[in-house]
Amino acid sequence: AQSVTQLGSHVSVSEGALVLLRCNYSSSVPPYLFWYVQYPNQGLQLLLKYTSAATLVKGINGFEAEFKKSETSFHLTKPSAHMSDAAEYFCAVSASGAAGNKLTFGGGTRVLVKP
Amino acid sequence: NAGVTQTPKFQVLKTGQSMTLQCAQDMNHNSMYWYRQDPGMGLRLIYYSASEGTTDKGEVPNGYNVSRLNKREFSLRLESAAPSQTSVYFCASSEKGELGFGWETEAFFGQGTRLTVV
Image 1 (cartoon, rainbow over the protein chains, first blue to last red):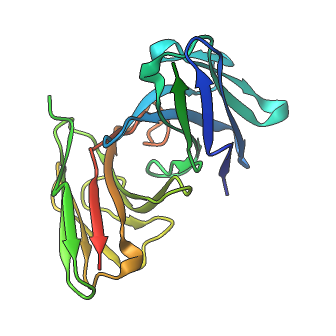
Image 2: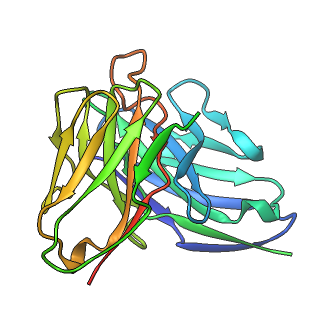
């Protein structure tokens, strides 16, 4: 079984400040990890993914995430928040051996960016 | 490029009514999925179809049925709607990755159907 925990359902940051969204996972096999973003009234789109290559993964819009196996974490960061980063962010895990894409999502973190 | 298209975008049903949510993708993907999104619970998989002609239950299948009509289309049916099925429903699709599964590749999502059951 696999699961994802996102710490903090809401995060408020000032424009220009660091964005840090926390994600911890559990998986019985080496996982693939994803961060998706959802803008208001839209579907989800992929920010970045970890697929057992480099542990530091760079995504779109200046986001990056680091896979730490010892901590079972995959935290998402962006050095300087922009107003357009206001959205909900979902961490997801998918494990090998499963037919079909059984992505398991965390509960989501809504980011508010203050001017 | 349309990607994944869902219809309708909004729907209000009375308890006990039935309806079908439609989903079509134009990316020639093999795998398609239906998720529901509820506040604080992320997205939960209802059903998925790894390839044309196959369907399988996800995490929360009770009260739903699906049909993989062809490679492009994957519909979700509520036979007798209940207030607990009030949610936002997302269809998604993905292609098999190099290892032959869909789980290692990006999922593309539709814009969602907001369903209210009263």
